[in-house]
Image (cartoon, rainbow, N blue to C red; front, side, top):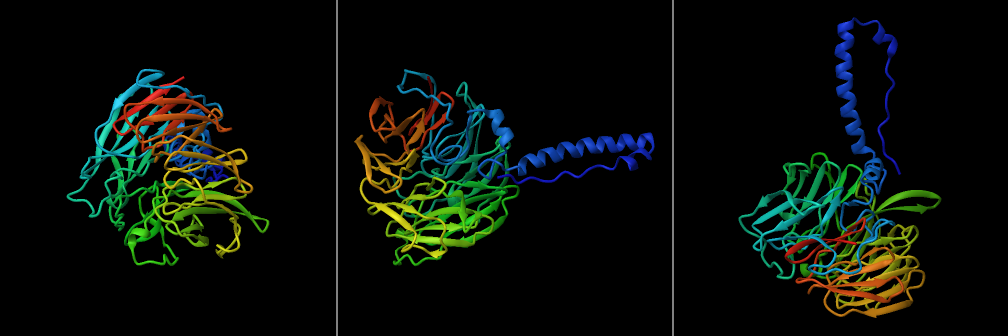
Length: 458
């Protein structure tokens, strides 16, 4: 899908009547305007995932992992990527960069640069950094927000920098939930705009990562006190729309109203017409909105809360892991309107479903990593079990897919490579574990652990 600005034709007959000096002035102005227009046009030519310019991405090649869960938000690397199957503190290691602070946000990649957010242990300093992908050297690292105090009831498991940033050719967008959202210049790291006025008591910490939709930056604010989704203008940070969650949570306890999921844009064929939908997982419900206006289209209600996943779509069906309590995997027909809980849920699977790791769509299967290490493939058509493999350990990091294999990282440093048929191919070990999800670009595996950033290459 393309969204472009039309070009107006010039008027050469009028130009020819002007004096030589006037022509020169107009030519200089024209060149300047043309350059500005091309730059502006690139920023609104959103022909990849409704957020990036395809020509620019083509120049980047495989070096494009710009958001949580990669180029398409589904955990898949480019088809030509071929990362190493073995790694350690010295095997296939290109570089290792020690990291201070405490942050579970995932690294993002744009060309030869890696971007990531960070925070101090006490949450009083929140920062962003740019790292050279080839060498691991820091290009810039700066504090974005300082806080005199943090919210009460912070849960020790989360970090103060858990939402993953999102990047385009010129801008890095970082979010720390209610503590602030900012747009940074990718070259210098300087702040271009910021918002610190969006209320939400996250109670257990923030987790929703922002996404793009054309000129909008969209993310969730599902907390103890407020639950809503908001769209800001990418150019200025102004609020374009804000929509409160509409359903009844069935409780007054705000701890069961929280969620950490990341939205996803899909294109749906409904009644012979195509429409764009914004899939938005919340506590006790899954919502679909019009991404341009925030108008609710449909919702499916369920019993679970605190989901940290990103939903999947295969062109026809939406797949959702519902979150904590006893999580379920739902297959949903997205063509309904209103509350479609009883009419548009196609099937439901209830065992070995991850609450924190997002699932993968691989061929005709949905691969789910349960938090205690059970990796399971379900038939995407029926929800029936296809294969199952016990990895063990504790998992928060979402699995990623590259070269026909699934890569999984646990919280104590173990890394597993599993074939798409469920065969364990390799077990690897690092000195500390992952809560962030890895990025894969080309033949490189970029891993953030609790205390370091690694680049491995085949």
